[in-house]
Length: 497
Image 1 (cartoon, rainbow, N blue to C red):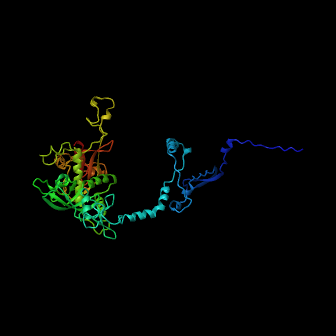
Image 2 (cartoon, helix red, strand yellow; image 1 turned 135 degrees about the vertical axis):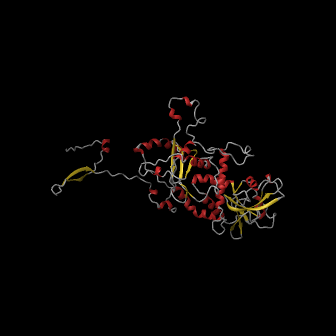
Image 3 (cartoon, helix red, strand yellow; image 1 turned 90 degrees about the vertical axis):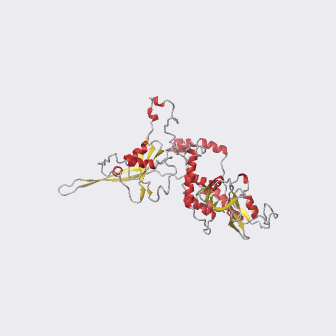
């Protein structure tokens, strides 16, 4: 009998970690030495050595989902194998989010980033594109059948109900009298007229709408003076027929317009106005998106007519002037310390230097954010110190395109810019008293151009400011317009102002 011996090999987990080592690669390294030249000859020496190093391991490619590997699948909504993605429940997502911060710090648990795509949403939406397009065309045709006024039916007048309001949510059809009556409190809504084939742009002004001014509560004035205004509103630029009150106790026209929340471009025979909401919207939009007044105005003009066939008259200069006046009034409303009743008998609004500017809220200011008895504290006195920095900007120039008489200042030193009359008087009086000592430093532009103008055609050569060195905030009444360079008398003025 022949016996067969079976050989059994024991399996150990350590064998899994023993991956085959990568093959070695031989690198050739050559050193070349060049000796100095002796007796007209140059000696070169070359030495070659071979170094055997293991080959660099190849990184494994990250796995991706099969339905995301092909970009064409994202836009092919005819794929019969498409299945919507299964979303995790709220409990699972909450459990995963608790440990996400700790897993991100562990390199072994890092997962490949998910592709940024709207693939599931687009694939659900793409099959409905024809239906979406059909619904858009439905808004261009009347929905009521038969065509009748939804307010008065056929009893109001003999006019056909051919008007609808685009700004109102319902989009019902009205006759001429009803659509004018329903928009007594919304005079700037845009309406359209049905001509039998399609809707054409119209306006409440063309249908006889008139806005009464000067009386509160909708009271009718029997002594009116009609006028037509150009209104800049969020609905567009349009005409508005108004009836000013001309009674014996009537308010001035500019005041009647302000009572109706219409800001006028001029107080003498106003013809161009802007609604409060348009000015307020531009105020916020200009800070968030950096849109200019020119761009905002032409956007409103595009809302009125985007074809270029009935473009409103260009009133950009009036719009820019209203923006400037609006911001000045809002600044006085927020920052001024006196009430309008206290200023009833005074000419203008008295503004002290820097009273309209906001101080740096983080810097120490006695009486505002500093404890009582801070003067006697000996421990860490640097906490109560105010760090200031003085610098000039020679890129912020202004061309000599206007003057102070044609374009007067509104704040008059009440915000960040110093008051110009007192500033120029100080420079004229003390500028010649300080001796000018030129610097010996070669090509030191800040000193050499201290009393030199930069170029022709410039009204200013830059600005100089006193900033908060810690938080980079401008101090009140600390910005100065430079006619020349950083002259010492000018820099001292804004620092000690």
